[in-house]
Length: 407
Ligand SMILES: Cc1ncc(COP(=O)(O)O)c(C=O)c1O
Image (cartoon, rainbow, N blue to C red):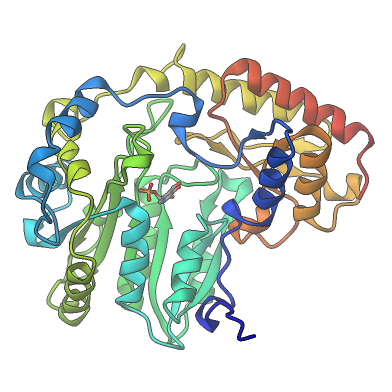
């Protein structure tokens, strides 16, 4: 019989957050086991809910949203995103430079499909949010990973970035605030990255989906607001995390900087945007409310002392650092932590096997560092969205597991 395999385009594409370890967890669930899933940043699954006014706005828009919209989005949404860009200091943007998407995910893939040919290289952080590497690869390009330095609060290593630039490098990706590390980059560091981009004629892709999930009074700076106007930037934002509406699929991207130099690329993006007709229209209706200027600078109480995300971050950082053989840098944003495990102590040579063994024994699902293109098998990611009681039980489980674990 004729058989069908996946396309060769997918041969080197890797997306482990929902990969083989998750398949094993699903299998265990099918057999009646209860699994605690600390692998996906999906706030609604952990009792977080979108504000009522957002839900009502989307529900009220259903009749008006029946048809396709303009491929980039409805005018009210594009205007609201434009205002938000102005607030963030990104200048020279018109509504024509903005595209709404079915989540940032769709736009990441689109932005890479429109840019890359075989042999083109894109600098992507390690660790990364793996969709970036996957999208570069799927688009036919090569992701070249630059190191983010754990000993320096997970900041990108500028010397490493410089070292990895070749004549084939077209762009650099930054994820700020970062998933999986929770790092937020300073203005000075961003300026250094923007300068490297200018010197080497690189485009900048800045994934800022967590820009409203900041803790400890850290300030978020959009790299597009400080880059030289000659540098072409694409900035990504969305409501999945800031408004706990991941399932509604609502994101956007903004083009800024030297658009004349990127004329051909923009033509390609317009074509790809038209090909998918438009993004989810009811979700676009949430944007003007979610980006109302009165909310700019507003701090969600969840992120302040006493708030759930803040207190869970405090707890998980302390609990991890108390386990013998684990250290973890405190995240400043989002809801992920990327702890380090002493692989010598536990004889670990395979991080996927480590999370699989932990899953089988303790019924808790983590993601191995390799899933974020971190080369050494000495990290894993935890989503700290569950409540304190659940997090506490999972940390007790990890501590107990490591007392005897040897690979
Ligand atoms: C850094 C980063 N970018 C993009 C996304 C995708 O978000 P969306 O739900 O908007 O597709 C995620 C989701 O976890 C993420 O962590």
